[in-house]
Length: 485
Image (tube, rainbow, N blue to C red; front, top):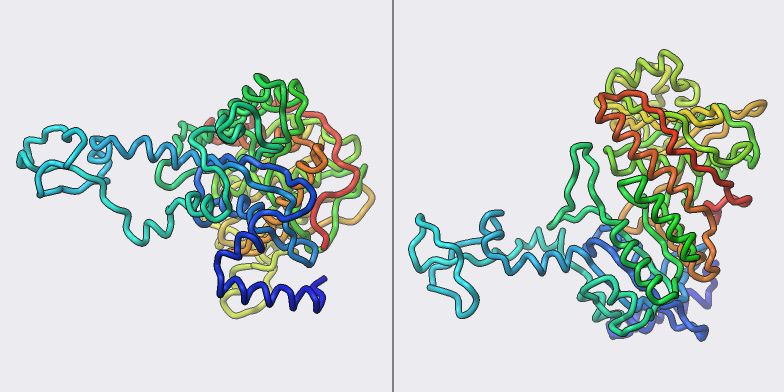
């Protein structure tokens, strides 16, 4: 609760910071708790404005809104490693690559004062050389690396490799926890394979940390943002390594822990017959988050999670045909859409309410629908429908045996605050403080495998695939873990 005393204090502090910017570090930057802070190493791909790394890492530098107040974690960011920054620096000296990729321009003033000459080009005069083009102001705004400025402002070590980040330049582990945020980069994107998977190096980051842990016989809690890897076998290896080395591993996205509208969950031990999740986004982007949201509710069914028997990816008209054939429930779809705050169609045109399912307008609004059909080992059915053009939010409805349907919206506040990531930051801090994950990593292991299986189905012309390797068993936490205040 924001009391009058806190309001006056915040107001005075804000005025002081405007007059003296250096106060920002001591006021909201890092922690000033009398209790020894948790020393954190943050490892990520790209620290640009709007990146996942910037959104989440900044929570541990400046704090975040939490339960009606401003929460400053008892965390001191000790070191940061930015993969794109290192790869970019390594590539910058290669003038030939810069020339080939078009990131160069002619220089007419003779050879450079130092450095090797560029490869000869018969189309150019002998005195012409290549040098990098400076990014435009627009490019700088979109891809500018924030890590050097953050390092100066918040006094953490900016590292050249992952072992250095764990040891903070010394010869022993000097941090109490690790946070990894691996995502696609703008300037130096990671490769993709023929299944359209981005080959993100989550496993490589983890393996380097695990090697340091094993060498030094000392390990610390580890959080991996979003999917564990693009490969289920690599994800399995990560979970097994954490068990062998006895350190808590947690992973996943913000959607399972954000607020719900209304505040409901599947009752623990309920008999769930079917669920339909509705969302938006492209392949390999927000579909992972939506699958995790679906999973965090279905794992609470009677018997807990026992794994997935088969999957099938559907596109285009096959999605609507599957609905007609009863592969997914139109009733559950209508229930899920009733929780949406962003219906398109006539609602956007003239404000009237519209039954998107009953009026049959979805095929007109959604030009390229996708369905992620899941058959669980215990017979439960789950379907994720990605309906770009119909809504802009994420909603679910589940049918329980002998009970009414349970439906809700996973609330995702917009940019720039994206306060759903604050819900995740609070869970990450809990992991570090208690050295125990508030929910099992097996949820993200299964969801990682599901996403890979759907990409395999799509690559094989939308075949139904048996998935015996996804026999992932685990019990959910007794208490629901999503935000309520």
